[in-house]
Length: 346
Image 1 (tube, rainbow, N blue to C red):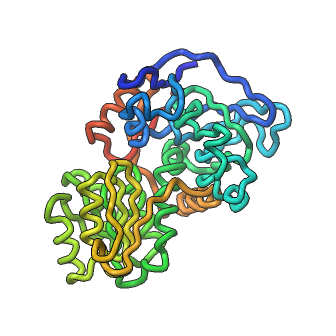
Image 2: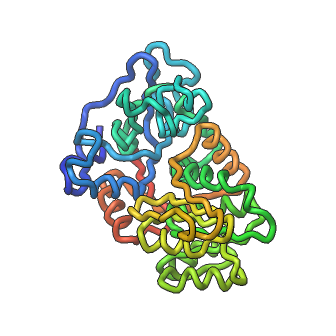
Image 3: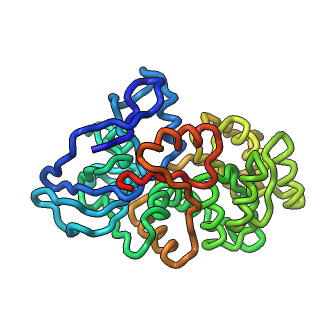
């Protein structure tokens, strides 16, 4: 089968032929319908060899949907032909966090060598994908698989981040979304669907901000040195109750701290390497800084339910398998408007 692999440190990903996988005991084989392209992959491909926590080559893709093609011995819960979404942050299933459904925070994943598809295990940008356990699949139902694939991360991650701050997103509050790309433009829709907050979107170009307005942002601000002051002005000096940074680079994390309100939440989601100092006087009084990871399986079910209700829709650009390297290049260059999605089987 064809697969998109990151094969050598520092090299571009390439489409290669690899053996067709076969499901073992308890596993399921998916014929991949669609797989999303994420900035996390670009971050991984920027790491030096000594920082990589898993061996190469690696088949990329941690956002995947498909149809069940085969079940291994003992696998139950699904039938061949079922349309499903893949819950990516696999865990051991039995530790204290997994017992709560929080496999994204599994306490034993590193010890046991459990890694998500596309981030250590073979990923979804391939014609077929092995899934380790039926609990990591969620029925897709009537959802368009092309638009649903990014919801497994670009929808789930902002949904989880927003839920953390729901008590602060009351009428009269302000939520700022920094970075309106794959995750950010979904976060805007989720904020509008789940809260009464005014949504302010920040990005580097008017084209990106146009998408932000199209999906529901009340206000848009060009990122830059004056962005924090602009948000302060929009909030009559109070600042934003919640700031969601989907870039996470040093300039954006600094701006996020500068625009947060007293008792505000700053949530750093992006992998740009930025940090915020925490201590008396470093941030407004009682401001909280958090850096969440992905979300729970139950939350993925909730995100898909929101999509079925028409409350969230992903703006996508589609690519064939052979075009997948170009999709990554466009993402790296900031040219993707929304989310790039690969169609491995056409």
